[in-house]
Length: 271
Image 1 (cartoon, rainbow, N blue to C red):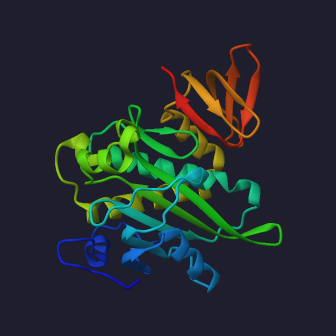
Image 2 (image 1 turned 30 degrees about the vertical axis):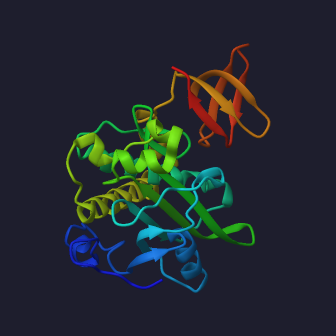
Image 3 (image 1 turned 60 degrees about the vertical axis):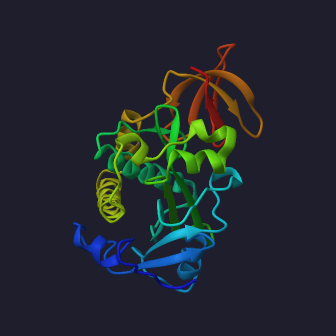
């Protein structure tokens, strides 16, 4: 693992040129290859790294998505990024930060005139195809959160052929921003725009509270009113998504008309 700043690739200097504020400008780390950006940043957090520290990598060798799934991380084409927050919140408030990250991702992708939406709890999709995901992790001190690491992976310039080779039968469920726009993505500009959007939504959370974030999330919801299959710890069923609870849990109505509130699980669109 070594710091990296290759001409023509991701560049800390180029990213900083497009940042609006100072929240994420001061402690940016760019690596050629890491096991995962979340792992690196969690270690830095335990060593006392400041809020706003950002770790970016050109590739990852052992990255994981939600539910332990592998995150395809080829070199030099996508974005693998984690940022550090130190909010004074109880553990139960942690899911709200996944919503902040998915909002920022969705809005950044929409800057390219691609109609991204958010698939609960933390995937960003174009139609039915996943383009980005969020993995929020935390360290605790007693009953309080000591730090939050928000990890994000975004398919930017990965080709359809690369997705098919890596994902096989799952490839039709994935896409990239370059595939959607039919042009190469400026990754440095995308990173800066994403960090600007994260700063915006963090400010909304701090000044207007979690409900303002949930309201914006509802407007970008890919699942509301859709028929889905649900695979959770104690529920395997089909039915319809009603919406989100005030705590950000998914409200699901099964075919018998019974309502369920899901904290976690895998959701598949049926139509």
